[in-house]
View 1: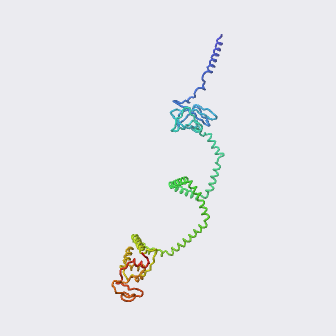
View 2: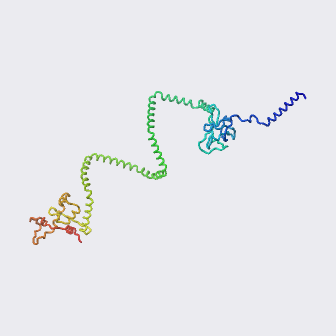
View 3: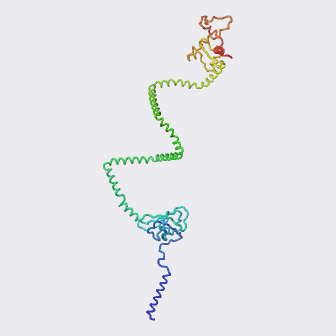
Length: 411
């Protein structure tokens, strides 16, 4: 075998060995990408996204703005992107955490931004954040597309029309518009200064609304029960209108009367003042006077034992003294009358009321055998129809006896 033949055989053997080794060993694709690992203790968290955009493996994972992990892998499950992340345990992810795909800059790379609440149960290894807990931030492409829609088919042309219409409306009316703006500024300033009052009014209205809402059943019942009354008032509207018109006329006439008699009313009130003052000064004596009248009534019931009695008296008290009638003096004492009886009767206009009593008085019998003719006065002259009367001839007289004779009462 020549040397050339031996060299070719060695080459074939070497190629065979390499081919066998290539079929059984790890390739470069199987090697991990540098920078995708996370140091320290980690947990695996999965997040589901409607759209993963161009998120790459090894993209950073930030928890509340702090780098805390990396994207391990990106997969697809039922048209949903599933991102597997490795997060350090010291990040302390809690239940209620949310994930969002964001750009580091408008044209930068994507990363997973995790918002972690301050409280809650710790997430376990293998926990999955569902679609309700994830979202994708708007991309630059989306922003440019929306801007293009606004410019080309949006409302910019309408904004131009609005601007032109405003210019037309303001042209020549600058002073009025300026005044309107100044008044609006004043109104807003005053409204801002009375914020506390407005707040109090709104609070009161809120309280009132709450009270009305709590009493809704009562209000509904009242509305139902008031319907018959409202119907009656509606039928009686003409009568009510006539009544109000009559009241108006009466008020007008009363006003005219008061105006016409104003001075007389004032004079009458001025004259009434002393009378009221006198009554007020004697208010303490009314009780005793009424009690005395009650006692006098009891005495009269003893004098008039029958069911009724009538009396007709004509006394001239100037011709005899009260002391000659012991019963009368007692009644006057009960009534609290201390003035002379003649003065009292004169003041009441009754000075001639008791003038006929003298004919009922008995003739004097103090001197037997000595009499005067009927009709003579104390000086010897005759008085027609009268018996002899005089201060020196009057004897003590009992009022009970006189009344018994006059009223016809009996024991």
